[in-house]
Image 1 (tube, rainbow, N blue to C red):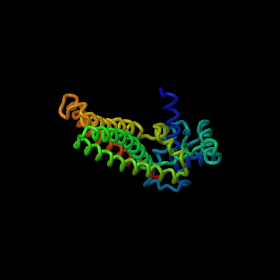
Image 2 (image 1 turned 90 degrees about the vertical axis):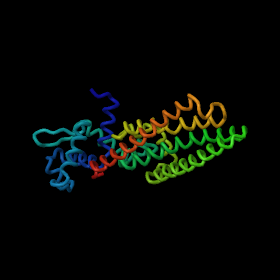
Image 3 (image 1 turned 120 degrees about the vertical axis):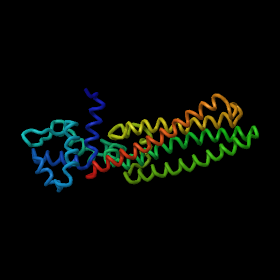
Image 4 (image 1 turned 120 degrees about the horizontal axis):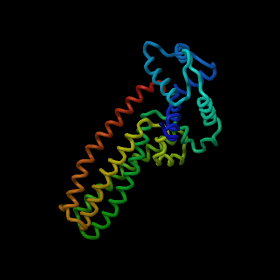
Length: 269
């Protein structure tokens, strides 16, 4: 049995696609509609787009927004409430004060991936900047030239990552007219609202953080002389990093493939 949160996520996911929103609005207007009527009204080719259309109907039915009886599709009570929500979000700014809900519902899977990369890059970049700044200060104090060079290179790379990631966030803010409220996207809750890719996002975040932070900690400790470059803790950190980096790359590939799958399934968006 689904929890209330899972149930809510299913509804929001179903409403995230423009074709599905068109379907329930059309059914609500007509009262009921057959499969063939809906495809005709939406201008879909049965020979080419029936698979995608079936997918949309399945998503709406699983979210309990529509129901089928005697070959006719009707909107449910929950579907009517969902239509009210859609209209309110569009017409009444106070319902979605910062525009984040509207943006999340409007994003394509590829845009979700771009936002996720910008979030992850901003967070990891800021963390590595902090670590490398401390490392540069300490290694300079102790006269450790190798440690300083490594820390400086890490600092420069993380600056580049952070700047490019923040720039992408700014582009998304402009596209969806979000202004500074784009900062609300630095929460994990945006994709928990609707993204079918959220499990992959969470797993990738965990492995990416480990892959980036552990080497930074190692460089900080070894560069400052707190820990020898070759030591049991250092070898353990290196071994964990060697394990997590391939996992991160595999998860990144999984995320991209899922995005491509969702883009093909939601081609009507």
